Length: 281
Image (cartoon, rainbow, N blue to C red; front, side):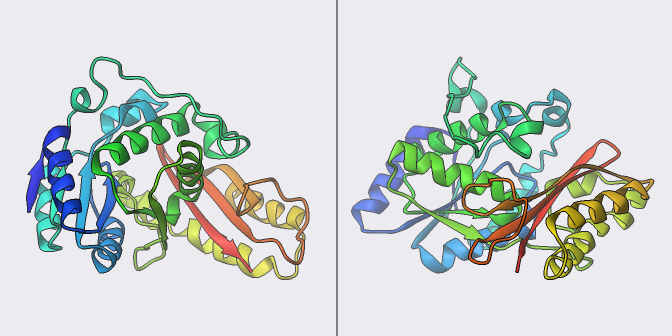
C-alpha cells in the first residue's frame, strides 16, 4: 500500500500508472470507515487496476461547527482496514494541502438539486461537497469514482458537477449497506446512545412500509403516515420526509406511471442526524 500526504506525490504516482494504461478507481471518504465504505472499495477493485481511497474531513461542507469538531477521526484504524482490503493507494492530505490558505467553497448553480431536503436544511453544504470532490478529482484523475446511494442527493449533485465542469470521470452509484437490523451504515452511528441505537432501525422500517403503501396510497397519505409515526416516537425527531422524482428531485404530488420515485428521510436521535432513502415501486 502506498500512502501519500501531498498532492504532488499522488499526482506523480497516478501519472506513472496512467502511462502504463492502468485504470484508476477512486473512493473519496472522510474516514471513520465501515463496511459501507468497504463495499465501495470492493466495487472499485473489481473494475479498476488501481484503487485510491482518500481520507479528508472537509471543513467547507459542515454548516454546523459542532459536527465538524465531533466528527470521529480514526485514521490508524482506517489504514489497517484498507490494508485488509488490499487497497493500493491511500491519500491523506491536510487542510492546507487541499485548500492552501483560502478555505472556502466554490459557488455552484445546481438548479433545484441543492435547494431541497439536505440543501434546505444545511446551507452551503453541497457547494462544499462539490468543491472538495472537484479538487480531489483534479489530483487523483480517476476513470471511475464510487459513491453510496445513502447520500442519494449528494450523488446527484456530484453527477451534475461533473456535467458542469465537463470532467472525464464515470460516477458509479453503489447500493446502501445496512446493519443486520436495517439501519443504514454511517460513521455517525457510533455516536448513538444504546437507547437511541435500539430505536434507530425504525427509520428503515418506516421507509419499507412507505414503499409498500405507495402501491395503493396517495402521496398525501404517505406523508401523513410518516408524520404520525414520528409524532408518536419520544426518541426520534423527524426533520423531513420527502417523496421526490429520482432524476431532478422535483417534488411529487401524485404518482405518474412512467416516472421514477424515491422517498427520503432525515431524523434526529438527540443531536445526531441520520438520513436514509428508498426507491419506490
